[in-house]
Image (cartoon, rainbow, N blue to C red; front, top):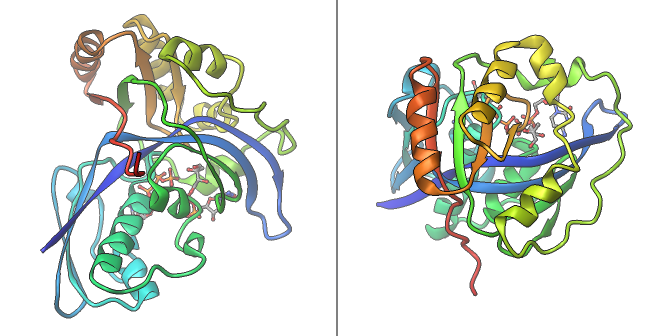
Amino acid sequence: MIVEFAPAKLNLALHVTGRRADGYHLLDSLVCFAAIGDRIALTPGPLSLTIDGPFAAGLSADADNLCLRAARLAGGQAAITLTKALPVASGIGGGSADAAAVLRGLARMGHPLPDRSERLGADVPVCLAGSPARMQGIGELLTPLPALPTLHLVLVNPGVAVPTPAIFARLGRRDNPPLPPVPAFPDAPALIGWLQTVRNDLQPPAIAAAPVIADVLQALEASGARLARMSGSGATCFGLFPDASQAAAAAAALARNGWWAVASELAPDPRPR
Ligand SMILES: C[C@](O)(CO)[C@H](O)COP(=O)(O)OP(=O)(O)OC[C@H]1O[C@@H](n2ccc(N)nc2=O)[C@H](O)[C@@H]1O
Ligand SMILES: Nc1ncnc2c1ncn2[C@@H]1O[C@H](COP(=O)(O)OP(=O)(O)OP(=O)(O)O)[C@@H](O)[C@H]1O
């Protein structure tokens, strides 16, 4: 059996800089990965999918599931088990992370990675890379970044599914400036200082669609986050905390609102040192 971790994707910053003729938006985003995620297990055999885990109920194992679409694109055969630990349609790339993990697993079983994995989803290329990157184009242009400093994260999802197309459709402006050059960050305060100068352009339209996102951001700040921001098209938000014990205490307190709230850190960097 082959097991692949499918870490949550976080857009630490996300500027929408334009729109293509086909309606897809041009992005400029600083992306990293958290140490929490889904799990994919593959065993040789005819293509099938079984889903378990805390968020299994939100998802169907039909032919549209990104795990099966990824396997078909790679021409791979395997019995796939997805253990769904991430909320569905929540801005942290769950489906894209799963698709990328299936592609990585099938590659280990001898099926080459397909070209143009972004056809599965704009976030699939960066999830395949799995390490900090500046993401541009519609998601297919990746510039690897040096390893980020240690971060003490809290991820919070208030339980509202936010469909990505609806949030892009609500954008006020589609011609925002790109990110400034991304420097190397010696420590977390340097990264947080830089992040305070940039935005997630999808945050205002997501708050308009789901006002509870503003409550989540305010609650993260009230529990001591040095920076609180939404990831992707929402509704999951992240807070950056000074240390692991403050992050754990904040996650426990925020979970008392009935929200999914977890303390985490960055995923191990898969790149060779
Ligand atoms: C918003 C982000 O999460 C930022 O990382 C991603 O760009 C979304 O990635 P994803 O969920 O893999 O997106 P896809 O499944 O490819 O696209 C879902 C829908 O979002 C919109 N979409 C997505 C990506 C993009 N660059 N421009 C868009 O306008 C399109 O309406 C598209 O039909
Ligand atoms: N394996 C999967 N996991 C999650 N969602 C899936 C999967 N397969 C198909 N989907 C569908 O894809 C849609 C987007 O789900 P996903 O969790 O990837 O969104 P997201 O977290 O907003 O991602 P992103 O940050 O890339 O926009 C959902 O409506 C869901 O029904």
